[in-house]
Image 1 (spheres, rainbow, N blue to C red):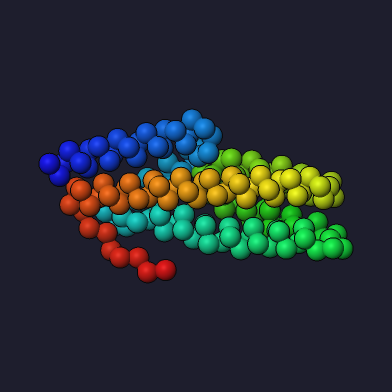
Image 2: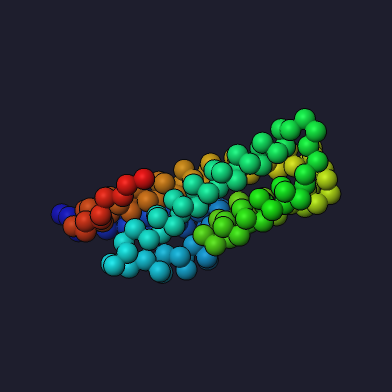
Length: 157
């Protein structure tokens, strides 16, 4: 029975991944990241993605703080944060987040504060969606591993 539960959870994982690819949330870079995971590092993808989430939270806070300044004019500083966000998002395969960051950067390059505020709102929404879906994926993956008899080391954050 353990194998059947693991097989069903594996199918759930694959359906969720297919859905995220179909929606354009993820791209092939996420698959390449998954290929780096093996029995010697069974939590590799979730560890990398959790680092991404941690750093992204800081970037989002910095972007929002910059835009909320009454006398905001430091578009170059914002572009630096956006370039970091683009790089880290593309490295994990977060396709839609990357696309929104690129549009955000374009608004910033035009010194378009209203466009930047709209882009920030879209970015925060898309980032939350990505985070929720990847957490869901990792929970299914952990359940599948437990059902299959694999034991993951405990992660401390």
